Length: 120
Image (cartoon, rainbow, N blue to C red; front, side, top):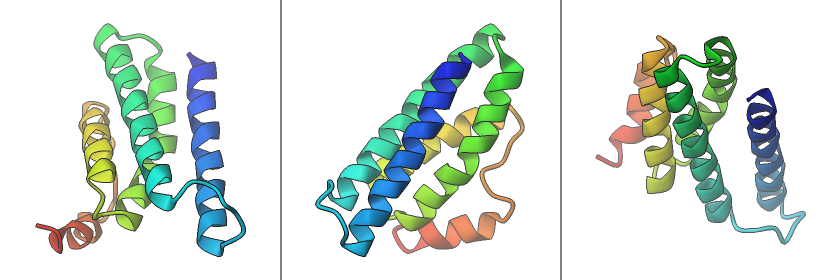
């Protein structure tokens, strides 16, 4: 289980690097929209994995640690791409799992509300 979480976190970091290259114009990598979709799908995959582990009470300490580590990435994804349905969908699923572990996405819900409010 640890290897899978480690792979997911490593993949996210690589996607961050790709996105930075796209923004800086240093790469012909996939467009930012493609990176957002891949990040959202990765987040949903991690969410599904965590949901299964929580339901079966398997590796809960590892799951909570990984969810906590992914939390900041999910928050950045939502704040940076709040107009993306993919990002909102992925983060919404993630928040549901976070709530099962008594973890919050953000210590300041107003920031999240403000980011999403313009699209309501």
